[in-house]
Length: 110
Length: 110
Image (cartoon, rainbow over all chains, first blue to last red; front, side, top):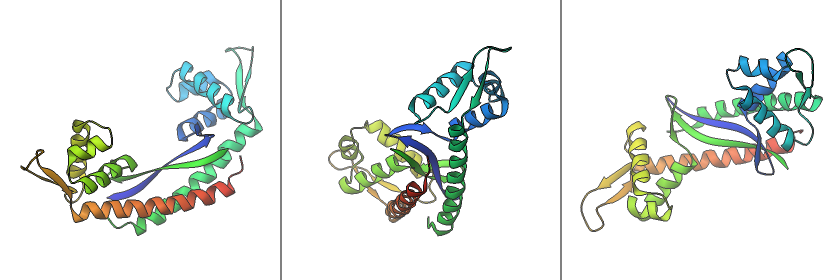
């Protein structure tokens, strides 16, 4: 079966700010309130998680993940309102792209 | 400036058959009639070109690049009618995706 595939990313001034993997990180942080737990859930290293989040926070127009120091387990992390908006917008885009790809795949002639 | 980016590929049974780079190879072969000249034009190694073309030919439903043995310069390579159709269809898809992305980028709210 031959089909069109579209990989979504959000760029800011040419730099890749978001892609499906990064959105998955944000969703998991939103769920767990902790970088460490989110990293464990997604089977990635804490370092990978930390670097990805630093990168998103640095390049985004507003803070996305807000780290909270102290407490048991070394402090939590919550999504800002802007971070939640990024997830929502990305999900809307994914839905639009999915519909578009379905239409393309009925028209493709290969 | 924040914008949606969509990377196009064509998959066959989950395997990536075509992407913009592979289409560029096919276009250059179509222009030059030679894998070696096409590789030189695109500043890639002959081996990279050869492996890419073997892969496309192996996975596509019909031969895409037809190699011709002998002659000076070690034989030429031409695109089959199916190969030309792949380029045309991919170009149509690129045009549709470009229009779609423009529309998405007027609607995005980030």
